[in-house]
Length: 339
Ligand code: NAD
Ligand code: TYD
Image 1 (cartoon, rainbow, N blue to C red):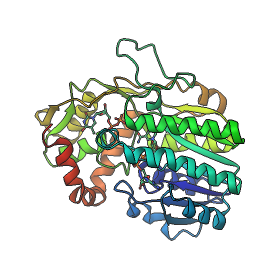
Image 2 (cartoon, rainbow, N blue to C red):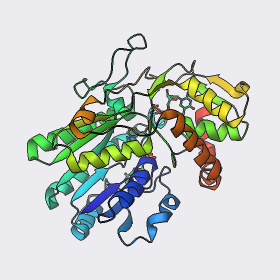
Image 3 (cartoon, rainbow, N blue to C red):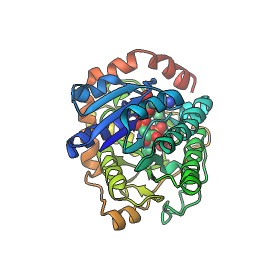
Image 4 (cartoon, helix red, strand yellow):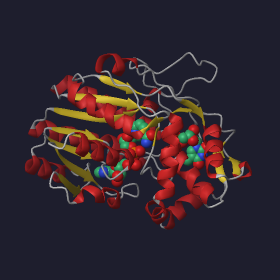
């Protein structure tokens, strides 16, 4: 099979490329990535010389480039990870989120229609369901939960999901959608909670916790997400949505304390800063459908995954130190300077 993986130079996409090369060496992977601030070609170095791998620098919104690529590759499947993915950036500048996350998805699906495809898979997020109240721990997001978004990021992802369903119903495009909870693991860009806190702690810099840090996220080790997508694209039903999560709810403050403790750094580094606008309270996935229909279960417990992750950042300092030495400094100043 020939699989186009968009956004494969980013966090989850790169982990998915590695997972596929290992698990299905008979399949060819073509990675399409615009290499925005979040894309890093050095991440893909281990597969760059692999004859079953090709990297193409392109924008998923560029129709001509996508058509040329499909003409050359005649892909069997497309797995779309390409996105603007950071909520805080979407609050500052929504437009690029609409462009990449909505228009990019439409252009990819149009190209799939034109050239024919066995499966178009949309990598979505639990954030499309909005948030759950803190005083109802009995509630979880199911595939039937109405879309009810909070941020420009989640709104753009929900819009894309609606378009994917529309292309299925209107044109019969063979699609599937997965909605996963928060991921953590190797190669996550250090603007996101866990790698940001690790990097700051190692530099003895303040750890900026939004508000009281009581918001809850449902954390899943990135490899478990990759495994779930792999099963969905091969065995999942066309036209279906699958929620992905491992019932691992944690308060932000507890994660930050755990990181400090592991690194032997003092809790006095924690600095409570102004809360995120429209901050979602709690995310929690009900993964019953993917478990019962496809037999997927997470393999990595949080207590092990977080250690693996911290150790990865300790052992791969050059990867993230290079990132935070450049343009990231301006971002950090703008986002946290006067917070
Ligand atoms: P990321 O920001 O680390 O990577 C995104 C990648 O997409 C980058 O390599 C970037 O260069 C590329 N890209 C951006 N715009 C592009 C464009 N116009 N054309 C081609 N490439 C482009 O993101 P991530 O955390 O790896 O997330 C990947 C996908 O998974 C996203 O769709 C996101 O919504 C979804 N998701 C993420 C999480 C999470 O916790 N990180 C959870 C659930 C779902
Ligand atoms: P993040 O990693 O941005 O993921 P998302 O907003 O998509 O869930 O943030 C995870 C949680 O951590 C979220 O509740 C916001 C909080 N947070 C902080 O408290 N401080 C920070 O510097 C960042 C980046 C996030």
